[in-house]
Amino acid sequence: MKLYTALLHYPVYNKNGEIIVTSIVIHDIHDMARAGKTFGAKNLYIVQPFEKEMVIVERIIKFWETTGKKYNPNRNEAMEIIRLSESFEEAVADIAKTEGKKPIIIGTSAQEKDARMISYDETRDFLKKDTPVLIVFGTGWGIAGEALKKIDFFLPPIKGTGAFNHLSVRSAYSIVLYRLSAAS
Image (cartoon, rainbow, N blue to C red; front, side):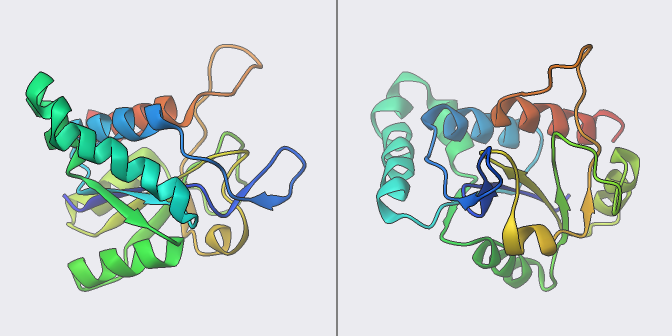
């Protein structure tokens, strides 16, 4: 299975619809790496253009490679899927280099996207055919700018039981990856 994932900190929207860079949330890194490893993601690209923010990710990885590894060795194994990337384009290029072709890029959103929707079944079909697939998760108020234009399809949003719809990205990540693996 050639499943790749990316967590975009840029370009994303803020609540006013402006394109911004969001900060690293340390819980996202650790929890998403564990879920990604559990559900077969080859890599989790952390897309963040600010060097000082990337230092935070590097510190988390280093902790689990050293002190944390002694405390809980399998957490280090999960951190091995993390790749740092300054841009969305860099992450896509790295996958294309590894796989010999550009991945199908599938975005996630808390809102319905009228065009370019794809089901979980159709996404699983791509993965069963050994096609590289990149599932993209946005931070802030969602994927924006040039990255949004490069997405081939969107998965349906995750809906709860009521009108409230604002999951943490790490929760949405786990749900999406579980749904992709559920009928495999």
